[in-house]
Amino acid sequence: MELTVWFVVLLATTGFIAGIINTLAGGGSNLTLPALMMMGLPADVANATNRVGVFMQSLVGLKGFHGHGELPLQDARGILIPTLVGGLVGAAIASWMPTTLLKPILLITMISMSVVILLKPATVIPQAGEQPYRVQERRRAAAMLFLAGVYGGFVQAGVGFVLIAAIAGGLRYDLVKTNALKILCTMAFTAVALGLFIVRGQVSWVPGLILAMATMAGAQVGVRLALNVSQRFMKWFLLLMTVAASIGAML
Image 1: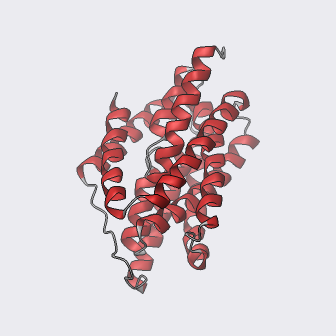
Image 2 (image 1 turned 135 degrees about the vertical axis):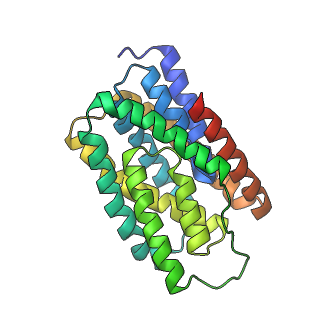
Image 3 (image 1 turned 60 degrees about the horizontal axis):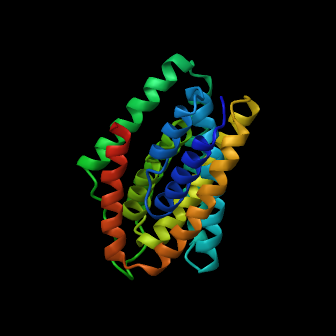
């Protein structure tokens, strides 16, 4: 792999945009993962390298939301356990799967996920002051979070939409707190996945760190936008990003 100026610009641009849209909604890896593959990285290495940027942008996003009191940590344990277990399962599948199978499966999974998001984007968004989730909703959300962890550990692309559905629709948080908890989940299963990929020697560090710097800058912008826009805007942005992620995955 030759790291040309063109590829640096490509990684920086897609990483910055991905950092913004991942913080506000999801689907940024539909930009960064193909960009890494365009550089000539094998599918397993591109999939692993992409996690460096996702992990670093998650740290920036969490710091921003926590600093503004929008990260409800009282439910963190119940949310993180199924997500972490699922993330380990998904990462193990991706890490040991033969590259000849992984690349087409990654592409098909991204496209399929984007189509599902596009055709069924509805997420129950709670109103301000609505009561926390019930036991039945908690169990349903835990199952969704486990599946989100498996999917995120495997491919990452579009997992934010699954997490939003679980946290906003199942746990009944508003979209600002939902985004904060979504980023917490993403950081958790990405840490597990990245650790496994590092041990397996599947991370290409130079493009990974370039991507990380760009996604961190994008995440800072995304947090400011998330804290200062209306819930109505967030709902429309989520819908638009769903469409954009779907189109990007199919190109």
